[in-house]
Length: 410
Image 1: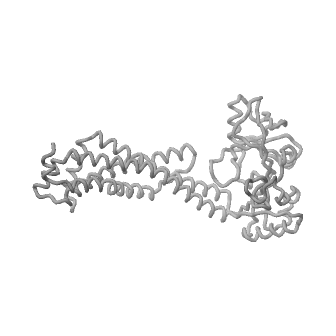
Image 2: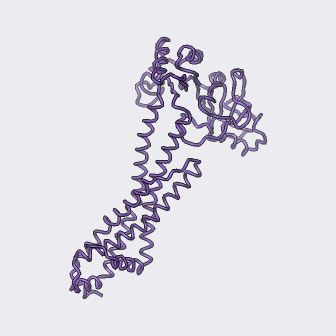
Image 3: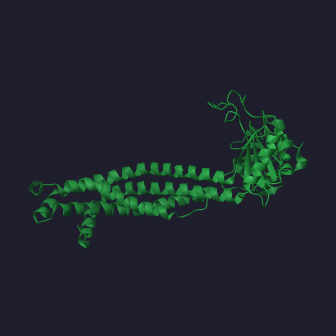
């Protein structure tokens, strides 16, 4: 059936005749399509933001981690290396790690770190969402962090009780009444540390294996002394200019193998991390799209209900049109046009709603917003699909009405 302008006018007239039902159906479509657009767009924004932050750190970074004999960290349930880590490889010593640049020409600098735990408080009040970490002086530059105030830890702070805090920790101290951050005292377990600096805020996400804004940095030698069961399990290394990542990796592996004593490491290159991240983000985006599709199905059912009610109310009109010579295909086409128009209007509003929602999420998360044209095309395509799929059954029911029975209806 060819679509004539009169068909569009008739469809608009019919939809406007029952405004309340039309609006309710539109709300369902707007929420459904808006949810799909927002979730797919946010997934894409998160992926691009993570890639951007990772590339800002540089693609000349290697992550060196302690290798566990059973394939997992000590005590991990179900891993061969469980049972308190009896099968784990020996931890690397700090002096051994710091010697890597001199023994491996392909490595310009290393930044080992050790994670701690325990109660953290300021002025007798517990601090939430913060974690202590022991680091070296090179940690700041290798991880592309910058100072907001004060200074970072130096090699001269080995025996000190100084700490540097992230922006989130600084905000917590100010909430607790700290008038001046530098010189503030933070208690970690039974040890008291003096704040000497604050790092600038870092956007959330990215590929760092820690949250910079929530960290309390101690000198690594201090961390190894005061943290319970402390051992170095992660090292960030910067590759020397002119050296490939693979060559630098081979040098480090050979150096660690020469140490013997059951020591082994796992080295991850930026290319491997990016590939893993892209795969995970694709799965994440598909999951978000699937969740949003549930709302879309609900909206589609609303469209079908509106069209079924419309068929019931217009039985007499259908009978008259059939008596005047309209074919079944004409009746079916008219109701399909109404369903598609309803879905397209809802789709257009849903696209606006979805883009607006994703912009707000990116704005408050301080991510770089990127308009996804594929998401817009997805919204238009899905709108058409919803109109045809959920409108076909009511349209077919209308076309199958017996004109004589339809004319007798009230």
